[in-house]
Figure 1 (cartoon, rainbow, N blue to C red):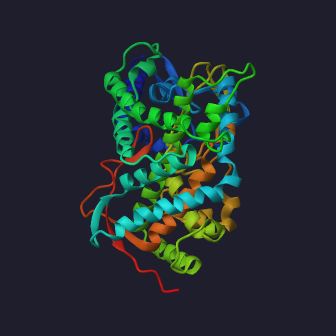
Figure 2: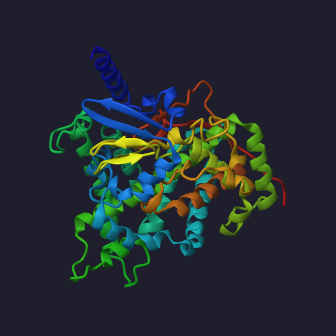
Figure 3: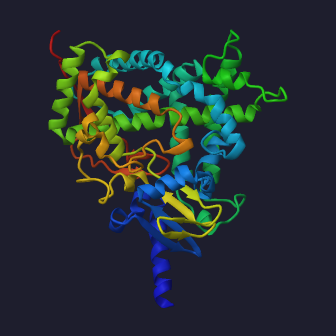
Length: 450
């Protein structure tokens, strides 16, 4: 009895230590075991690291594993009933409405916007003194926020981009934490720490979101050629339009998912490149050979093989969406482990992507893992930076396109180095961000003459 109490108390202390940084919940055993059961406060949580188990939870029996209360409490105050929170028939309808914006036939036009906005940012960098310092995570976040608003909503944020950024950071500081209330299964209406501050952040966020929606309603033309027009033009089987509150939720969801993860991916890539000068040199060699000093274009994507491999390996080591939290509706069995109804199911891409049973030298940065000739060595469902199954990220292809292009054009023109003495620490909350940003010195790099 005493031993059980000590074990439960140890698990509780471990979970509570993860309130500010989920990564601190993981222990060495999590990286060598396929399934890790954690008992706490009369509930069970199972960390699933077996690829077959990941497939079962996310694909073959996905209906039995909706988002957990922890996940809903993190997302719902900001995203409402948007695509990333909703379940069942509502989610299926929203996914169907939104899916055309992620179609491959739009990528070429998307690339033009990414390249144009990226070149504008780099032109600003060129006007700075060599060795100037900036927070590249913030710079890429501003850039990708402007890009997603133009692509999805035909809207230019201007200075409002900073309002959205501040609001999200304020919200993440409170709702991005794990609360004891969810572990205890307390009802949603009970107050949580930081709720008032989180509401203020949502109100600030909504001021800009409503401006975006209002601008779309004022737009001319009847053809819904972007996401927000598709939402406004939608009519259900009875001829009713989508409720304004749900349009707001979808716009908020697409905005956040469409820029934050890409900005972080590119930021983490430059951090890794500094630590691995041999990889950086191979990247420069490919960029100089393929681009010959000119800006990249959509047609170059197939030739930027090593550049894409760097992005894939960055997503393995630093996945922006670092954890998926679900709850079993009915009892199940995963890889021989009994799963009681109501159990929490955690799939951490941070753990899965660094698992010692799934990857050779798992903590090392080796982009060659993702070169085409090595693709068959990657175990299915051991690599899930965009999730898996029917709920795989709608913007996966856009995110990869944007990440590759931004890495290419930036590395072509600049070398980025972390501020001397600054300790880069990843913090896992709503997304996987570097604590305190990523201050880096930017030094122009002269590509070879064409």
